[in-house]
View 1 (tube, rainbow, N blue to C red):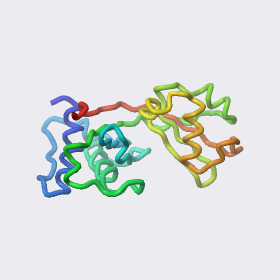
View 2 (cartoon, rainbow, N blue to C red):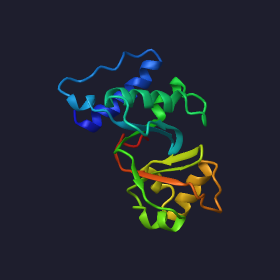
View 3 (cartoon, rainbow, N blue to C red):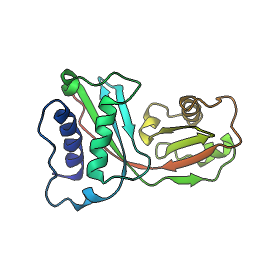
View 4 (cartoon, one colour):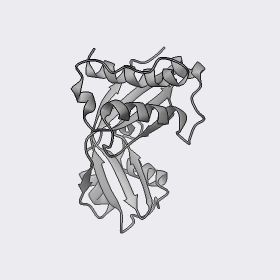
Length: 183
């Protein structure tokens, strides 16, 4: 199995374990699963978001981070009710393995727009105690950079008509692994 197959199998097996399936086993000869990595797992059902949770900083091994994010996306994403066993066959799983966060030296919305790499960057906005993140996959939903930032500020409950003076911007990239679409 290749890296993509291993990660996707691990995430799906983790969800199945919740409903009584066997504990996911670690494949042999996979030392790369020991690397500490930040991960997001996204669940979609019929093309609609069903859960998306992860970590921005690498604190767990990739093996543990995928399982943790899969469980959180399915059962602890507060925007949705927990996934039911009946839904498992209808779920489409995506795993984003993040690069380390990189501060972006910007002070205005326009500077941020100029610095964005559309379709490439995931973004974290922070102002005071409020913050929000969009993984790079969100560019598929919001391809216009101005809209991307507007919705990200809204998600963080920050003003959408002004750029806070203390706004901190960080970016990252992600390697995306996704299951084939289920029909």
